[in-house]
Length: 120
Image (cartoon, rainbow, N blue to C red):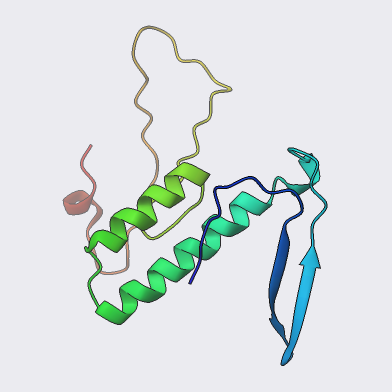
């Protein structure tokens, strides 16, 4: 289970168990410390994992949990089962107002006819 504290934090502490014994980590906090910028991302990853575990228990990939997973992933720029990243090459500019169609060779599985699967 994950949680998020929205109140004012002066000196955050993380408590848990490791190797069967209680541990506590103190994080120094003076406003927004760049060295701690990873914390929101870790929280979001753990939240997504927790939501995915809960989703597996109810065996419903299209529940409200799916929306929560997607919303969390989008808010924190993370990949999930419901989000993806698309790489866009902005280093080349095409002529005119529209893009240029480029035909790309596509490998076809053995036993499949190229003419019936690739539309030119």
